Image 1 (cartoon, helix red, strand yellow):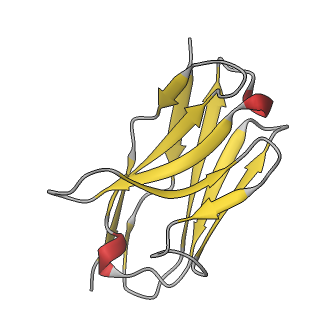
Image 2 (cartoon, helix red, strand yellow):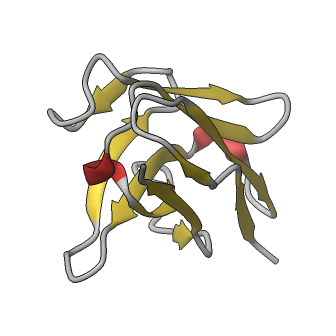
Length: 118
């Protein structure tokens, strides 16, 4: 059974930092491209950051310089370190695993809530 379990979401103030983690089980984590998406109320889910199995990273323009995605293949974990959080960063953050180009499998976690408010 494949599971992606996110943790670390919280209510924080503008300017604060937060670290999200996603632990994967049931997949050969090393070959999967991992990503974080977020969905704000009333908006579509959007890509925040992704990291390839070779640790190449990509970020949404809105988070460049503030967020860092990383992965630990030994622990089957992907993390998102977030600095200088702003109210517009509020949303449910989802962990995503994509097996391409090795397989067609795609998996989502259940999400973790991040709220940035004063």
